[in-house]
Length: 107
Image 1 (tube, rainbow, N blue to C red):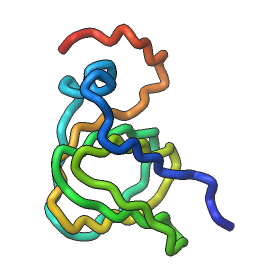
Image 2 (image 1 turned 30 degrees about the horizontal axis):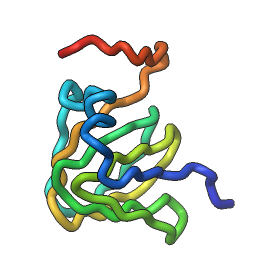
Image 3 (image 1 turned 90 degrees about the vertical axis):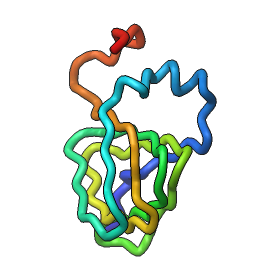
Image 4 (image 1 turned 120 degrees about the horizontal axis):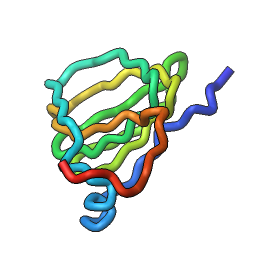
């Protein structure tokens, strides 16, 4: 049965959108090209500074492609394989269960 969990991609978000998200305060993560089995136990939002990825949903041949300049939201509970063709450098944030207030403190 196909899962209804979907990765959403916002292509080239504006600088004001990125500032609103406060991404420069987010931790960074990177990986070299290769295949990675990932399971997301919390919703993750990430912004790719570099890289190119095809993400295959587990148990499916469906994939989405994203890369540098994309703002990507990955739903909680999704298992997927990242096929990384260009090394990734990204900012990321996991949704915490606490209220996500828009008045996030400056870092």
